[in-house]
Amino acid sequence: MTEISNGLTAVGYAGEATNLRAPEQGLVMLRGRIGGDGAPFNVGEATVTRCVVQLKSGEIGLSYSLGRDRDRARLAALCDALWQTGTHRAAIERHVLAPVRARIEREREIAARRAAATRVDFFTLVRGEDQP
Image (cartoon, rainbow, N blue to C red; front, top):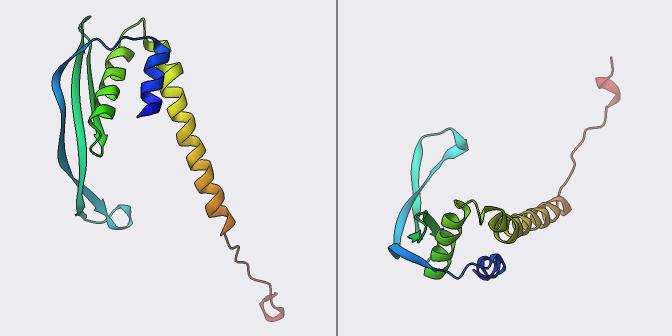
């Protein structure tokens, strides 16, 4: 949440927005498939928080956030609404979205390096009786 909050501070927006739907929590059913193409089945439920805000200029921002963090859901909805305005789009891209993308990419690279460290290469040597 702090990276979104810090990004909005850098954008310089005062936070004037009306809650059309205040942050509220609920559950969604997670579905899965065995092998990616099997019959779907219910894996379980996950908690989500949603929020809808409207700027004074009329833009409506919507967010669904995994977890129960109401502040993060409202900040994400505010970012969505500001991104729709021509005056704030570039600043939201630069100060909010770019840092989030960079963090996600760093996390992916770390996970890939950890997985690569445990990689085992299997190969077969050609035996004499297998040669033509």
